[in-house]
Amino acid sequence: MNDLAQFMTDNLRSLVQTGYRSVLSNPREARFALQLQRTMARGDRRRKKTLKEEGLAVPPFLICSIATTCNLSCKGCYARSNGIAGDTPTKPTLSAEEWHSIFEEAVEMGFSVALLAGGEPLTRRDLLDGIASVKDMLFPVFTNGTLIGPQYIDFFKKHLNVLPVISLEGDAMATNARRGRGVHERAMLSMQMLRDAGLFFGTSITVTTENKAAVTSAEYVEQLHTLGCKLVFYVEYVPIDAGTEHLAFGDEDVQWMEKTVDQLRHERQDMIFVSFPGDEKLLDGCMAAGRGFFHIGPDGAAEPCPFSPHSDTNASRDGLHAALKSPLFSRLRDASALSWEHTGGCTLYEHRDEVEALLA
Image (cartoon, rainbow, N blue to C red; front, top):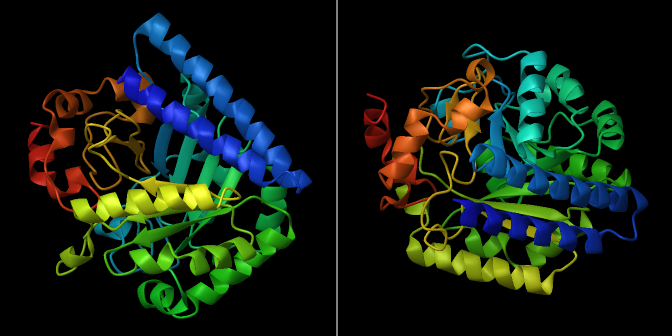
């Protein structure tokens, strides 16, 4: 675990250095990158301190679903499928103050990055206003981009540690087919507003067996760069909907994707590319359940990952220390469950019955 954490830390540091080199001509982006470098360095020191003093290996990442509503209804949405989100609130949610407490504890332990998801996280402006004061943590906000307007532009200018990441499926036809009519066009407008404001922002692209070549092509990447995007998350498709299993990556697709992303990193050093979950075999299995990250649901439930909504510990009630030591997380790691054979982007989703059995 400690070796893995160091491996992830080293890769994060490399990403940050790449990001810093890519934005030196933009004062606001350069200030963001310098702030991020300092944040990552402090987090690394705190993780080592926690390991030394408590014997607790803290991963760099959290994934947090902070909203239970969304203004879109995308095909194959895991949040709707798992009951995290809907048109109206689907389950109890933590208050802004409770989330703030979680992130303050996270900083002290050495977590550096909390990826914010939902639902649509920009519906929780009350929460974002509160956590933006947690300066020693980076908050990438994974948003459909349709709610970004002048008020959010001003917010992002003021709080550089809250980083918008706009979700796409590729071109207009692909994005609108999954997300709804006009969504791609609205997302493009949001990206233009962010670019014109001189803000560092990213995009998240769901990759499948059908679109992987298109969304990693030199032409498409150049389009994103022209729009001002400096960070690209490639997220492997998880077949939530029956009949879409053919879209999920197999081993050859994973290897192809890793090779392609490595080539992009070499050719486009003015951008940052992240592949998730990436080559799990290289990492001796899935990074969930506290091995590299874990997920906190809207009600504070500590879960192995967003696609595995099973929990025996609540991060708000019990704290992050207890979450990392939870019986479920320990059983998943001890049973080598994170190395189960699977097809597609999530080991634990494919083996959800076995995960649920570990709760007994």
